[in-house]
Length: 325
Ligand code: UDP
Image 1 (cartoon, rainbow, N blue to C red):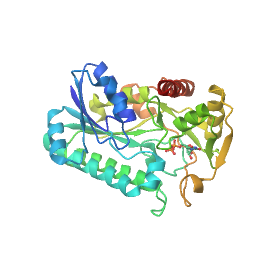
Image 2: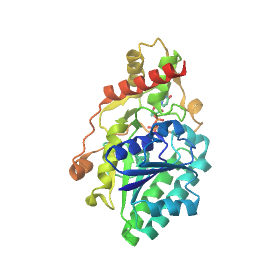
Image 3: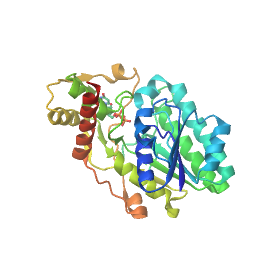
Image 4: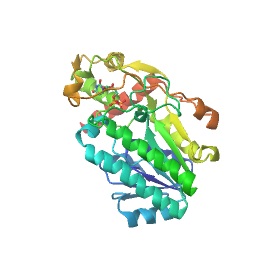
């Protein structure tokens, strides 16, 4: 198969490109390098089955050509990271909605299957964990910037499902739960790369609020395995799937664990949400996936637990420090 990956120079996209190439497929990546990086795909450049195009996917004639050339599309291009979203809401909303609209309209004309990467953020403030795919999406007021991300991705999901129901374009929607691993940058605010780089630099670990929020982290290798398998599964078309790990940890406990694993003497610093993000910021206290649907459909299970996740991120950042000196 020849796959197009939008956002393929990003953290998840570049790992997906690795996996698809290992499986013998051809891969084209389109990325505007807004949050992606050439470093993530530099190792693939000599591979004759790999091609990358650095441009915005909003260049419609280019996108039409890339879609036409491919057999199916993984749509991963999006504005990501709570920090970026709170700081640049216009960019978030426009990028997420326009890119998906354009891609689906072109894919429908050419009859190319699309897998849309969405996010567990769409469940919003729903307190009823674990979240299953039919759970309610509970979003906050439109004056609170954070929710624009969930809302823009929910519109993307509605569109993908509508294209399947109305235009018979095969689409699959996946909701990723806090994906982590090597190559993820600390720059966009994600907690594990932040804590690890802070601990390795001997800087304070910034725990927002009182650290009582919890999350479930998923290793990127598990995520890309699920993406590749769902793309090949007819029963997944028109459906929504959680992709995650149900091992939960409180953020304060995570900070202690990173500190211990890195043998760091960094202190733990509590930062109010109003300082970390914005005055009216709302966090979500828990986010746990129900994995029954993906288990039932493709027999997928996450294989890397939190210990393996932390080891791989620490090793990656230690390596980055060694390469820099
Ligand atoms: N967080 C934190 N310190 C940081 C970055 C994040 O305490 O330096 C917290 C954040 O408030 C949230 C959790 O870690 O409760 C996960 O944040 P992240 O931005 O990684 O992902 P989210 O699940 O919020 O999209």
